[in-house]
Length: 84
Image 1 (cartoon, rainbow, N blue to C red):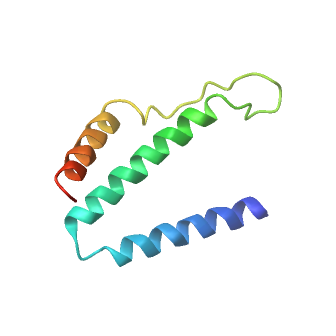
Image 2: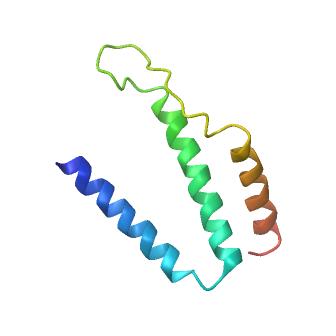
């Protein structure tokens, strides 16, 4: 359905961006950190949305926003401040 089409469209966009900047390791690291940050933001958003249709918060979380995520964000911020 339309959900699968949206997923495929987003996947194609990300693949295109990654290929476009594949010659620069620094750009790819920055892109990956940005994807990690976006993933965390979406995970936080979804943790507050009723995903199971019964009015209850599912409370489901992959734990992505902990630990390695914080390290990744710190690394991307330092790259950005260095003029990435």
